[in-house]
Amino acid sequence: MKAKQKTWAGLAFGGLFAVMTTGLILSASVSAQGNTTAAPAGSMPNLDPSKLPAGVATRGARTYQATCTGCHGVAGVSTQAMFPRLAGQHSTYLTEQLLILRAGIRPSQIMNRVAAKLSDQNISDLAAYLSAQKVGDAWTGQNAALAGEGAKIFGGGAPERGVIACGVCHGAQGLGVSNLSIALVRHQSPGYATDVMHEFQKLGTTGTPQSTAMYLEMKPLSDHEIDALAAYLSTMP
Image (tube, rainbow, N blue to C red):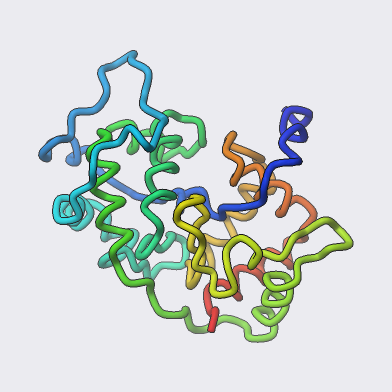
């Protein structure tokens, strides 16, 4: 597995937080809503975002409000540090990550089961709704000195260890790039940001160029540096 992961080393750097991957905690009741028929058992799941139907934000709002607010907060703005914020996340990123969760390519004890109940229409609707929501405000209570260390890594990387500045792909404001499926990371939940960076570091790639790049970026970093990055992302000015 490690040798296979290394073959991706030449791919472009990108995408943080495969949930932000997406962390949508949906219940089985999703399948009871309109246009929710999941793929027949045993059939090959769709992994191509371009084959998804157009999303309907109002329908995505109903699905989200009925099943997701307990963890991810009103309109995708989580107030619990262990859960990711989804508000304002790019629809391209959301759909891509939900597809690989549904197929089991990205392992998640909760989300593999949950995403398996989502139809293509569910995924498009949720992405349409969440991407239209306002990004949450900065988190409070973070260690300012620690966040300052994270700002240096975000803006300058650690070239001596082959770590590229996070802002190169995610942008100076952490807004990401929609057409490249590079995640918005601004004001992400600090606890979740720490967890998912460790996930990239220890579990490696899910097969996408973005996740491979993140594995290569996170691998050289210490636990302290990851904590610092999480503190900065959650409080970006």
